[in-house]
Amino acid sequence: MNMSEPTKFIAAGLRGELRFDVPMRKHTSWRAGGVARRMYRPADLDDLLAFLRTLPEDEPLVAVGLGSNLLVRDGGLRGTVLLLHGALTELRLDADGGIYVEAGVAGAKLARFTSLQNLRGAEFFAGIPGTVGGMLAMNAGCYGSEIWERVVQVQTVNRRGELRTRTAADYEIAYRHVALRQASEEWFVSATMKFEVGDGDAARQEIKALLAKRIASQPLNLPNAGSVFRNPPNDFAARLIQQCGLKGKRIGGAQVSEKHANFIVNVGDATAADIENLIGEVRATVAAQTGVQLHPEVRILGEVA
Image (cartoon, rainbow, N blue to C red; front, top):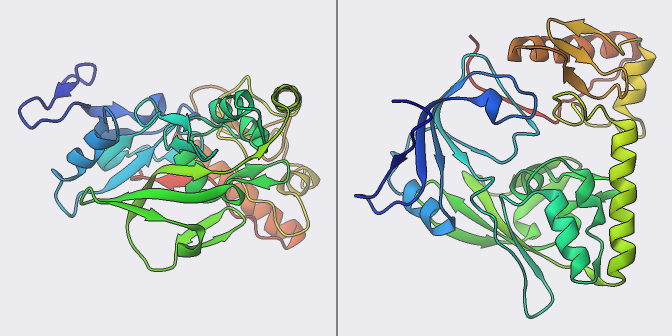
């Protein structure tokens, strides 16, 4: 099957696109990684539910948005990737003043939309290079704010295509950590959030300032996955990495950024193994020199080549 030619599920009533043997380097911000055996981009939420109902119970599933917090090993993914960016894109202001946003909406789009409704408190989303689904899954945040501080409720879907409505009380939520209190395999498909009424112009100015800060401090000119490591308590991963003399450290095409030590950049045809090995070397060096164990906040999935 040619991966450039999507298969339409007209007979089954599905409206999305299925592709086979898709290079994940095209769907991850590191621009590295192996091949996904199957990839499905649903037409919308209803189509996603219908597709999930066609899958066997043991089919491995991975949901991907912008791929900005993801490393797929060079051996690829055996199951099905659900590509939600460009699919689950509804974003609206509800009558009660809440913002309904689906999982495939990018953080910057959410920030801009909310400011246009003269609401404040969503500006920080412009500093997160990902989509809402991924942010919910890891309690993403920056500049002192986190997404779950704004969540009223979420919708999730399980592999049987069943929707559930949940609140923060259903989860253990901490810094870069979200887990259901009762284990269940579910994926976030939408959230309803609350923000304060305020000056939209001021919100847009703050968004511009945050974006300028990102450009000045982060290596956005090279493929990267954002911050690689969680900050340890009362410290910063970047400070520890820099203290250990690791800025510029390179394995193959992967390099610890000279601009921001908590970023690993692809400086030229890095393999997923290059990146994962560099993550491991940074962790080992920081632990040996400082005694601090750094924990990656990026997801590492797939088979070793």
